[in-house]
Image (tube, rainbow, N blue to C red):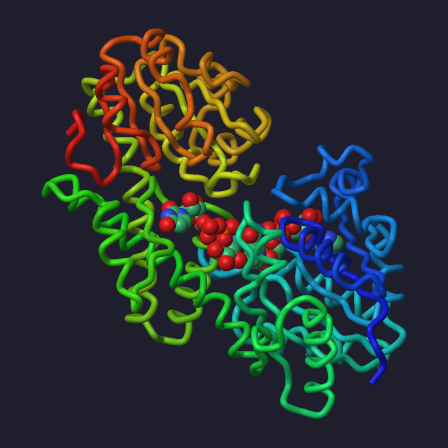
Length: 470
Ligand code: NAD
Ligand code: UDX
């Protein structure tokens, strides 16, 4: 068995970049090249100033600093990297299809197929191909067919190795993964290929956390893991509304049920709705697969997780409008947070986008502060919805770099992301500078309710019944 000395990863995004950085850090004897068609992204990965890396993740800059130029490289030379690699990770985007059959549900696999065809064209010796992207179950079959039928007669082993990192904690999740999942063929060559990948992870993770399965279990497990996690958020969000009308407190309910070891305490934080590039896309994909296989009850069951999430985002926006005397037209509303969760600059599917959409439709003026998200991104997110007049977006959206400026003379403050710094603000100062009554809508349950009420705020916090705003 030839040892792996050269790895290529196609796709230098939120998964490819951090994952390859950690693999290179922990395997200094392996040359790791992360390639991407996006030149600006690669330039940012190569920027001398580590503050300019294309994604923000705590701890990432330190890992890149250690490995970059030693055995970690970022490049746009995709063919060259494929040619030299023994093992090729495919970590390209697999968004929800926006056209044709399965539109709005199925995963768009065009980028995956392009990679397979490029590998088939370029490869001159045997390769291990690793599916790192999240893919519908059975995608390995399609990859195999393309590689074997269009290739140069070289032999391929296809492994599934889905990534479980969460953004904001990517480096910690990679360095101390609960488990790594590797799926491969149950043949001598398949088992050998799996062992090669096991060896790479075993250079920093204990063997018992590295799980090997058949390819289909591995592919499906990724979709199922995300569906289960998102289902917990939708479940607690459903309970949050019940708490508001019954006198219960959702954080007390979460704590009480979470102490049952069969339930567990994680992923029970009520919120304005889950976001991120994965949960919605992967559940929609699961729903599509089940429904195409004629399993309509299975599809309907999982679709409910998405419907509940949409409801929670709209409910929060409606609460703001209703509380502000049924009109937000021309009123200044301050948004604290735009990213889909704290400690990331990623805004994909962020609940903030949908709450803003609703308020803009009601002609509110929104002033936004997020510690890591840039104005251009916010404008693009709103324009991409395709439901708002671009002129109105530019007229009504202000993005500021000082949170106190965002909240000055605002009628209401809405907390959309749980950034730690928000709880530590001088809320008395905020109150003094706001319009009265001064409303706060805490969509993340991070503020000190008692203290803010004492200051004089009219407060609504998801899942709490003891708030001034009902
Ligand atoms: P991303 O959009 O940040 O990165 C994908 C990159 O692939 C882009 O930079 C794009 O330019 C590049 N690319 C696309 N086609 C290419 C090609 N033919 N050649 C070279 N480069 C190409 O996406 P991401 O968030 O890193 O997600 C990648 C995959 O990982 C998806 O399947 C996603 O579902 C999965 N995943 C994501 C996360 C997450 O937290 N973001 C976690 C686990 C799994
Ligand atoms: C998720 C999965 O956790 C990860 O394993 C997978 O690889 C990619 O998708 P990510 O989307 O980066 O990761 O972040 P995650 O921490 O899962 O949060 C997703 C969304 O759920 C965020 O908007 C977050 O704010 C929300 N959430 C999470 C809640 O509202 N409440 C919770 O208790 C947990």
